[in-house]
Length: 121
Ligand code: FES
Image (cartoon, rainbow, N blue to C red):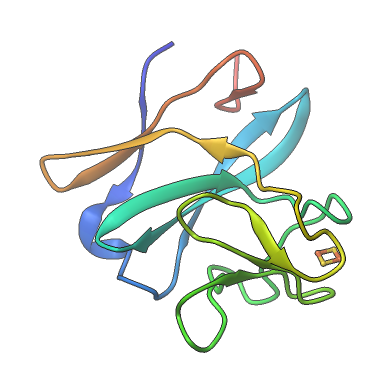
């Protein structure tokens, strides 16, 4: 499947706001998100490992205040930004579903697979 453009690289700041993008995940409409950590973009399905709901209370706010972990706004599970592994909270040891991304020519693209694909026909 072809890569899909998410946004310009400049839209995703280190430890700052992430960018959401629409996906169909396992047959349901959902969102993915991309954040930057250690200079690299990382993307995940926007679905907590505890209860399958979105992590961000305010759209695009995925990092907790230190900028070191992603945090679920519902019960406060924290995740490593580069592995998606849950390091604390009700789903410790669980993980976010990664979505492969690639940064080329100042743009960030995601790679659909058999389970997570772009919306539309
Ligand atoms: S739904 Fe995310 S920690 Fe409970």
